[in-house]
Amino acid sequence: MSLTAAPERTSAPSQSAKKRSAALFSVTAAALITLLKLVTGLLTGSLGMLSEAAHSGIDLIAAAITLFSVRAADRPADDDHNYGHGKIESLSAFVETGLMLASSVAIIYEAVHRILFHNALSLPLSIWPFLVLGLSIVVDYTRSRSLRKTAAATHSQALAADAVHFSTDIWASAAVLVGLSATALGERFHLSGLELADPIAALVVSAIILAVSWKLARQTIDTLLDATPAQDGHTAAATRRKLVHDLAAIDGVLSVLRLRTRRAGSGYFADLTLAMPRNLTFQRSEQITMAATEAVQRVLPSADVVVHSVPTATVAESVHDRVRAVASRANLSIHDVSIQQYDNALHLELHLEVDETLTLQKAHDIVTRLEANIRAEIPGIDSILTHIESEPATIERPAALERDRLIEHTLRNVASAFPEILDIHDIQVTRHHDRTQVNCHCTLPDELPMARVHEVITALENAFKFESPEVSRLLIHPEPATDNRR
Image (cartoon, rainbow, N blue to C red; front, top):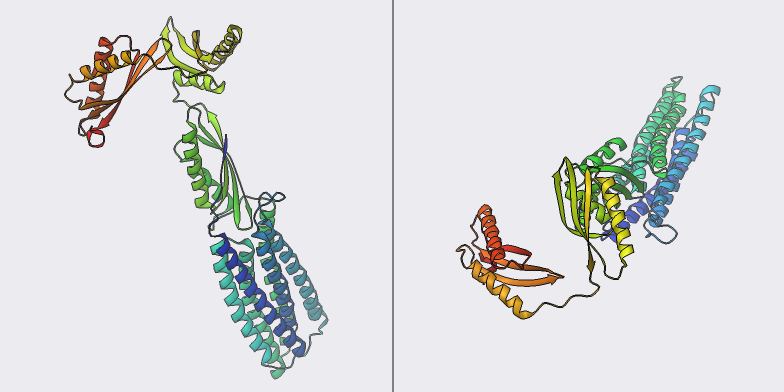
């Protein structure tokens, strides 16, 4: 049995607006900083500044891709994309990584060429590179903080990658500042060797880009290959162990047979296979499914969870439970299951209900298969006696009202002999073939201990069956006086 629990999406429109606003701000800031760095680098001839301009140009392209991706990723699932469009964010991060790697290679090549062949440019001393880089640091700090905050609120992988990317730009700009300062000082005071500070600063910038690119590449490739997502600073393995531990701790879960998780953009998907006791009701299975969904969503927020339950025999099952489980697998209705042990063997007796329109041969075939399955499930059973009963296709009419009134009158008289019984109500008499059953509600004092309640109910059953031996079964539902006094 598989059950699906979809995540709540009530705040999706507001989250999308936050993501788009943060991405748009990043594009605007990147365009401004790129233009300023390019103009300053061309005017001063600084390789470090030009490398920063190239880096900012990559930032601009990356920010534009991020803006496009967050818009596309928020589109709902459709017939062609059943899991949504969230992986567009991961794809955009992968493209961004490639652009960063390409720019790093180009900058490293030019810087090494200038160092080896001693053709570093003579840079005029100017205040503009310092002002532009200072402004760049302020802008990068502002937008990385904004992106990080929005990414945490919306669980956006693309925005989180941009936040990390732009935070490292601060250090890159600082490295270029150092290179420009050293070069300017070398020319002013005629210090040989300092003219190489600018290409060395470019190498530092490239190293930072490579480090960020490697980190983004690993995260992006893991997501694209459906690797187990990490969460809250934990490794993927630690996240998986926590999920398995929390799921196994749910009452009713025998074991976690399979756990598969994946990430797509800001969303998570989880596929669970849980072993549950095979005698659970469908409603209880649904409750366990909801508990499993909540356990996963505590670790992976708003995850879309699919739970597949596998009915499993437990060591605590009784022989009666195992017999009923065999019948349930065949969709058969049995009752009055009786098991006796003598001659060092188990002997089973049960009643099987079949459609009254079946022929005797077909009914006998059903019984033969059922008994064979029971013996396979419980090898210790030596003999099986199955009583075949026809299940009426229509609802039987109630027996004569006079006989019902007589039974009700007898029950009330018997109950009056017990001082603890305050009231008998909702008496129902039903008949099925030659069997008569009586159901009733019995009002007892609130403070009466359950042990005494059981004694009174048992004594009432025995006394009533003695007076009305034609009744095969009496079901009594005890109720407290404060709720049911009549």
